Length: 124
Image (cartoon, rainbow, N blue to C red):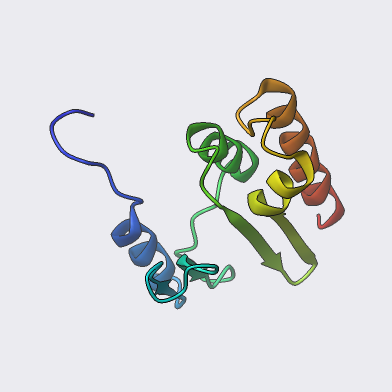
């Protein structure tokens, strides 16, 4: 989009969480104050038994697309349910792979997709 910048959809996420009795919490740590551990964390909690709960959709595709579009951003994805949780940290992946490999490489994205799909299969 060229006319205006596009955000993360936080107001929409907040609306969806709150309509199920859940909430959204945003915390930020500025680089000037926390040079080694800075960034923004968004935690969304949904009441999945609420009548207004909308299915989350393709989380594997969503996370993979986020990483492909911003391979140098540190994403920590945690989806926790009563049956278990699925986790992925791009910071940890980069530490294992080194600087020579981009997380946007096809083979890496396919591994990420498979890893997340396996995680979701275990908590079904």
